[in-house]
Length: 112
Image (cartoon, rainbow, N blue to C red; front, side):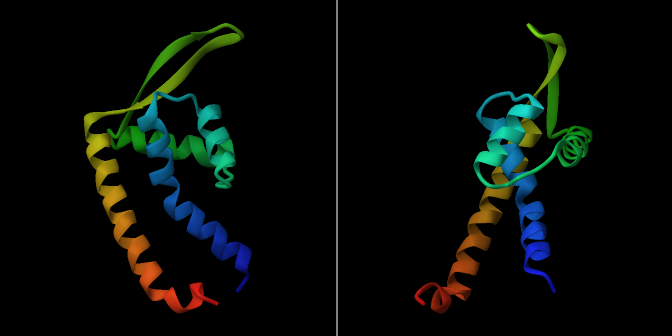
């Protein structure tokens, strides 16, 4: 088993939480989302993000508005719906529980 494959799977598992969190701060254009994910070392490409955004929109967690751009065609800016806010709150609680469980399980490893 390769470490890089496992690391990539772990990142994918939390990508939805991170994307929703970014959008919850302010409505966001996909390239802005990618930039913030890259800053956080959660490197993602458009081919990964766009299907996720569509799935979240189809699940009624996101919606979007079109805004005029100074440098080209109008752009789609995503924002959370009320359902999306509730869903994100549930994900954050689950993340806290998982984070605590992992920290407890790996406590001995962390002191080495």
